[in-house]
Length: 407
Image 1 (cartoon, rainbow, N blue to C red):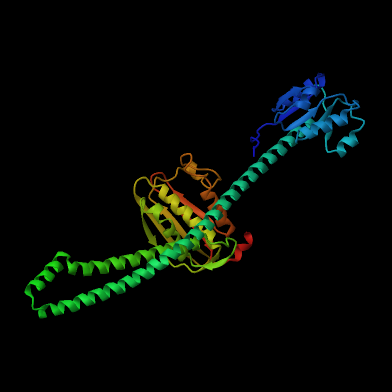
Image 2 (cartoon, one colour):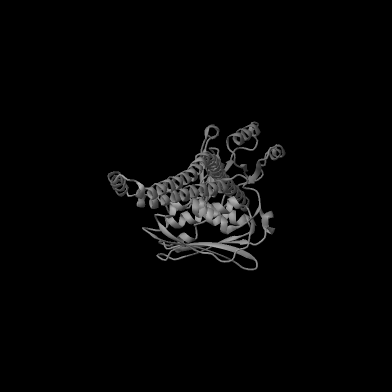
């Protein structure tokens, strides 16, 4: 979609090649706006981007109505008819019915208040059109982002389901292996009891040499540790899968009473790989009662804040996650030891598409989307930052879901 450029002054196209057209163009420029003049033939082929078309022709032309209709088809902007005093068109009522601005009287001398008002109204309409197009563009971008996240969520949930199957039998096999190892060592212990009863001293010496060679006592201890570590690893994989399924599950529009501490733990597990090389994560968790919210959306806010915190740190730093509540609201915050945010930049961090990251490394939508999510929950985001001193983002949400009508 091609967006109109923001307008500071109106761009007016004057149609006509006579004295009246030149007078209108001069007066439009005197009002501080841009103007250009074209002939009737040129107007029908004109493709310039303008905010207003003023036709400065003799009012008595029989084909005036058809000509104006042709212009209106070509230009999606107001079309006005300029006349000299006393020169109102005979078919003015018909033109008004068609939706044209007509009978703008232009006399020699200073621009009239009527002409000034006409151009100002066209400028206001142009600004509104530009604003509407920008809003539509942002809505489309957010829809694309939302669809992308939904697709990733569905894919992640499917992958998690597929991973669950091998993880299930690996876990089962490790449990069985642990039992087999125990049984084998029980048998070895029984054989060791019989060593003293074997009459062949050479055979006994050979067995003891082999036992020392393979370090049987070490194997007994290390095999147990290996099995335990495998079981812990499988449990970790299962936990990540459960967190991923919970994080990406469908039902984003559903309100649920949610434990935000649990949601925070799940989100930290999901973004662990993003954080582990950049920062030590410290959790300072306070009292936080369950809160009614849309869990997957709050998860997205948490993820955005945590990833942004990691990206703000050069080298290795510290990310502190805090939670708390009072009588009316609950809150969680993410503080980093990164480079901080300049005061001028701080004013724009929630603007859509605003980013300080290099090209290709940020969409400028993360904080904007987070701000919208929190606002729809009836909450707010507070930011505190100074250059060189890191940044702290605090999300405050109402304790109850009374504000869900805001969605």
